[in-house]
Length: 50
Image 1: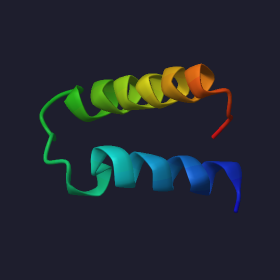
Image 2: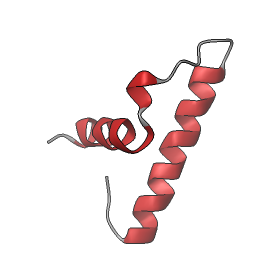
Image 3: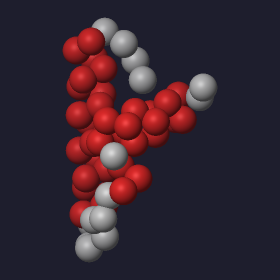
Image 4: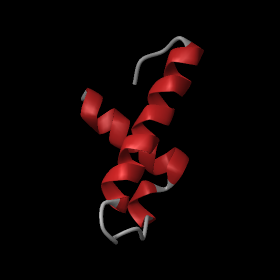
């Protein structure tokens, strides 16, 4: 699986990103950054790379 595909899968499964309903202003972009940061920090703590 490609790295981007794996990241999408992780975000969808762990944070249910596909069902997110945030659409006002920059909220979607801001939450996407927070989700990716949380995934990166979590993966770094477990010693694996998404």
